[in-house]
View 1 (cartoon, one colour):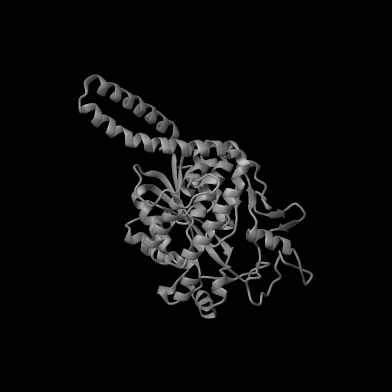
View 2: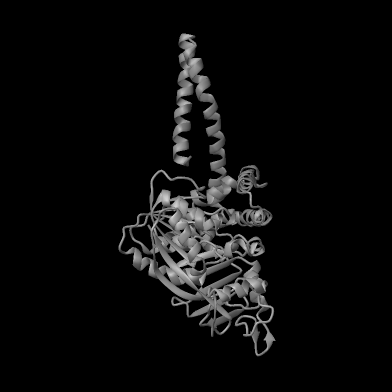
Length: 430
């Protein structure tokens, strides 16, 4: 319930309650008693809600008090989602996170996490988000030709990077030097590895800024995404897009960039089963709100049919070839081993969107085509390019890696820091 509407209904109910009391004293009839009893319960509920909104409002006027609360929520959400990530029972997952949101409260204000997180969108926390000082700032060149990492005391510039985190130390025996950690056979830049893993980061690229902190449930915007965005904008110039739904929103980079660069776009909805991802999407919407008029933003919209279809659903789901379940351990060890999110996004999009844009690795193209046919959809690949392949779990399983190579799903590359590459596709579904 929006604050303005809540205030209006509370005042209206109060007036009606007063009138029912006057009516009773004048007539002594039973009707005013019935009216009074009917109105008093929702009136009390509305008063409680107003008290919560008042606390949130005053909190938003003192943005620096939010720091400790936000850090606490972030830490507890990360701990909860790490404990749930291996749980395949989605009903238990949803029940657990909903209970967490509603039952857990901030000790200093007494406000539930659910109310606090929604307050990030509902009230103007822009000043706090804008003035927040990250532990690490990552500047990405417009053409992705250079990255500069910097904190208060250090700086590292990498030219012609392959990835946002262009590190190959995940390999047991890397054949190429890591651009980040090795120089002249000497290990260095340990400050950056620690900062990238543990501190809050602000990523700046073109006309957007993205706040991010590492975790199994939250990934920074990938180069695959950034390389795809302008071709997507060019393709969408043939269509009118007013409303956008980002499925598996992560940091919200996909949807935010489209909002910034499609003039007609004025509605944005997002969903992610990870609570931290939804929280960061909201924060990043606020961080970028001055550059675009972000209207009707919906927080953590559970997967359900929307009242009206959106013009566009976008998604960059996790993916990994599974060879018909032959390598089940790989699926269990990493989030991207489960292509269920891909199917769920397509199913949801068929019911709720006029068209869809997906960014996926073409190593799962056969699986994707099976899903599209099952849902009676059509598709076209509108853009594709090569990208380094660096799924850590794949390199720990030689049989799985061999299967990827034998089926030409990954190929050897002359890339300066990575041994293998694979194809990324931007796909239009309708």
